[in-house]
Image (cartoon, rainbow, N blue to C red; front, side, top):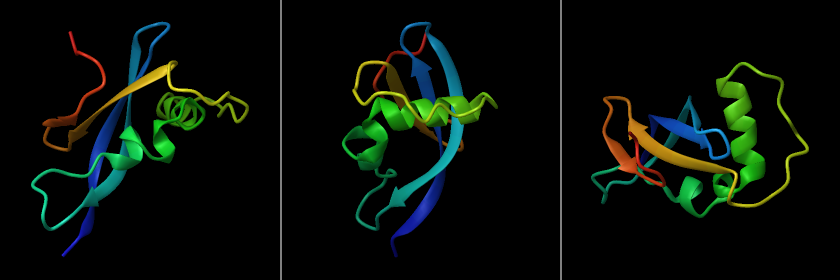
Amino acid sequence: MDKEVKVIAMIRKNATGEIREYKTEVWLFDDNKEPDSYTWSEGNFSCDCNRCLFFDRAGGEEENWHHPCGDELYSVNLKTMDGKIFYKEYEVS
């Protein structure tokens, strides 16, 4: 049965290289071995306007609701709760 699973979005602010971890959930479909990354790779969470909100939340900061849309300001890697990266937009050093 399809279900939501907890994962960690490692959100990098590209201008500074700072990475913050944001706990979230994504779908795990019966026919997949890994959680689905669509929402972060192509869907609503792929836009800088939303990634900025998650980055702010992860840092305990006031959310910036006026951030412009785009796809250059933030990059995301997704990992399972046990640390396995299943979606990667940047290299971890």
